[in-house]
Amino acid sequence: MTEQTDNLFRAFRRFGHLTRRFAWQQPQPPHHHGQARLLAVIAHENEPTSAQLAEILDIRPSSVSELLKKLEDAGFITREPDPDDKRASRIHITDAGQAKLTEAQQAQTDFADQAFAGLTDEEQQQLLTLLTKADESLAAKVQDGPDIPDGPRFGGPAPHHGPHSFGGGPRRDFRHDGFQGRAF
Image (cartoon, rainbow, N blue to C red; front, side, top):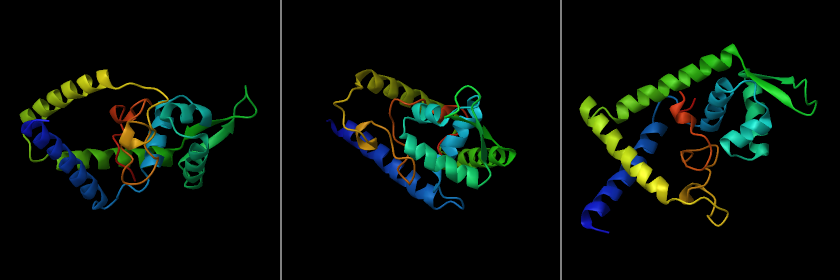
């Protein structure tokens, strides 16, 4: 590793560390990131089942069930029996759930604005272009397979809760479909 790449990598790690710390200092820290991600997927999909949600988010069905129970108890979703499969339920976002999702999306926007406030619009575009280029290069080198250890440190699925739930993995990335990682 050259000194320049070492410094760049350290800068990325520090930025990630500071953004996590900053997120936890917000009026609404990201304690329920998994719930917000799940709400975003439910809002995006057409009446998904819990099995479909587990597949889309690449998390255990038991974790989806636990999150759905919390969302249902809070009045953010409803479940109705699937007319085609009596063992499954179709999940719907409620008006309260949509309002909470909108609130979470606005909180994410506000957080991102604060995180990048030190950069001009042009610098933000340059950074986005460079990060996209680096991301595409790295993505071409990453191999999926059972021999890769699971977990966010190793490129696998991240846990569905807590401050470190921004990991990668093969699941669809709903951060670009409206909800960008900030929770309620």
